[in-house]
Image (cartoon, rainbow, N blue to C red; front, side, top):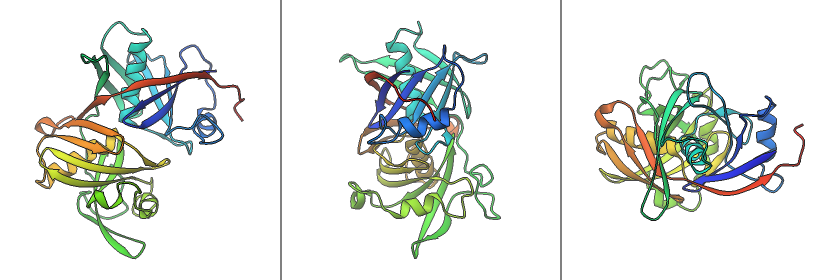
Length: 279
């Protein structure tokens, strides 16, 4: 099976063009291919196939085999399609787990591909996250983990994030281990991504993200969106900001508190052949 390794601000994936492939056990394949040391090693498996409702169908599996939504993954998928000449246009629609998603691809004067994805209207409704509390709003949710109290601002951007405001410089190199406990906290029956956020200024945020089913990643598109939404709703940021992660910088826009957009570079790293049979 042919595969392509892609990345966006250090968020790296194995991508398979499955338009001409039979349906298979993608969950099992994800756990094998994403395994570091034993597989290709990645933050997730991306599968692009045909669709009757959009240009392509886009699916993503985490290394633990759970299917999810991924902003950086969709940006990588769009750049792959353009780079490979599989589309003759720069605006691509994906049938994704969260609905129909639109991605625009551009190229700068240095030949670097950029992709901007519309992540849809974010939600802080407790039922959308979901949160196992009798509350309507997911902002300012108190939670106890490892003997400490935290305040989680829960935002659904295709996938749910618990945004926690903190001084990210204290754990720039190593994300707090408590993130693993927060991901699986009883408050979140479907688990949750954990995004630690520091507001440098109204148009500049710094984040570190622990992704559910993955662990710490160098960057996260949905996490960047969730951070801006939470900061904006708290009056700490405007409607657009540069969001910096260890892997690089993304631009996030939330005009009129409608759809939220995230843009940044994405690229193909290498290609290969997967020889191992799916268990």
